[in-house]
Amino acid sequence: MKMNNQEWKKLNNDVRPGIKLRGKWHGKTYLIQKKLGAGAIGVVYLCEYNGKQAALKISDKRSSMTVEVNVLKSLGKVQGNRLGPYLLDVDDWISPQGSRYSFYVMEYLKGEPLITYIQRRGEAWIGVFMLQLLDALQELHQNGWVFGDLKVENLLVVSSPPKVRWVDVGGTTQIGRAIKEYTEFYDRGYWGLGSRKAEPSYDLFAFAMVFLQIYYPNKFVKEASPQKQLFRKIDGVKALSPYRAILKKAIISNYDTSEQMKKELLQVIYKLQRKNIQSTPGPVHQTHPPSVFVNIGGISILVIIYYVISLLFQ
Amino acid sequence: MRKGTLKQILLITDGCSNQGEDPVAVASLAHQQGITINVIGILDDDHSEQDESLKEVEDIALSGGGVSQLVYKQALSQTVQSVTKQAMTQTMQGFVNRELEQILGKGQSLEDLEPEKRGEIMEVVEDMGETCDLEVLVLVDTSASMYDKLPTVKEALMDLSISLNARIGRNRFAIYRFPGKRKQIEKILDWSPALDTISSIFPKLTSGGVTPTGPAIREAMYLFSKKSLRRSFKYEDEQPGMEEA
Image (cartoon, rainbow over all chains, first blue to last red):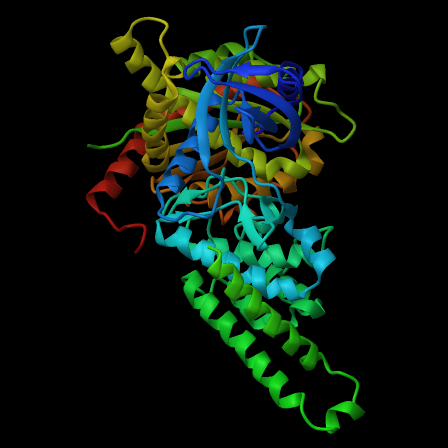
């Protein structure tokens, strides 16, 4: 449930940079530093506790907050979880005016939005992040969860080594249930291409839409035959051409698991690399302008290198 | 254990009632009989959320124990499903809070518990919301000013059915319009498990200038107490797999 204007006003009035927030139950005090962003049900602030920075989400939608905390806790139990932020504290706060809020504190992820990262560093990174995301999704799915609200805004790239992380787990749903929270553009139900049941293929549809969104920053609305429309949009992006077939299969929920999709993605990358090796030697090449395949071949080598590096640092 | 069935009336309107009894009073009556009333007020593009003419929307939902939201028609689909789900959670929490009061004493609610315990109880509430059966009677205002909003309402209702049918629990939907031609309300769709077939039967035309919201809610309330509905659920219980067939 989204907050209305009045509720936003009250929250922004009660919680401001500079104030100290003391938890009712655990008694820890957090110094609010600046606003990082706002979600559907609350605001996230950068705060300081014991000289360390952390992210603090606060809202008066207290039951929705409790549900989010439950998800963060369950994800925290996943071994070697590198998917979402770590949960540090959960508490209530009563403002000097007597309003009651719930808040939780999590690890502060300092990163760059996926979309600007790819725009800045080039499309060589697409394959890298696709593989990383599929890995993360696979881990999540194997533990019985579906991310739900997968979208560009929820993806951050943290540096050294560059790794994609997700920030808002509000939509994360147990497999087999109804998706808790979604955004129309990324929702296969909206496009008439599937149900809103939490299953791995739901995330894989959103995955394909994430990479479309990067090249259609203004989004687009549904037309009469959505499947054709989305296929056309995929075909319209040159940078996505090696991944066309895979993305289309994700759009029509053709993959049951992210593992299947990852396998095919790795095959595509491998094939591109072979083409590259075959087409580079010999004087023939010099007489032609570098073909698209050569470029893509170069890209795929980069992809594999970065992917291996990111695996090493996990 | 057989899980209970939640009953909701979803009222979709764009203005104030102007005929018949006070809808706020009727809503409170319905709430006492275990029916939750949710109200969605559709704003015209030149309206603001502070508009007085839609103040009634909030009041009806408050006394009907439900959720209300004012929304521009572009955001109707997402609002319809989130209002419905929010109201389900709210009803469940109401049950839980009454139980807690019995155990912990007057005035104690879920939110007075420490965060860890609250988390455990919310898990139960979520479980109940996912698995309970749900009956939604949709009441669409088809007075003259709704004319250009009806196609969006239809889309939003089909979308609602996609969302709710992703749950484990079963659903029943019925759609009525008001004012009817001769009666206060007029049936568009009888109780059925999904709304994906409403495209052809959903009204394209409005049905008059008056908005008898109060009488419409009263009629809708009576429709819930009809025995035929209970029988339809029982019939399915005896023959599991009916819907898959």
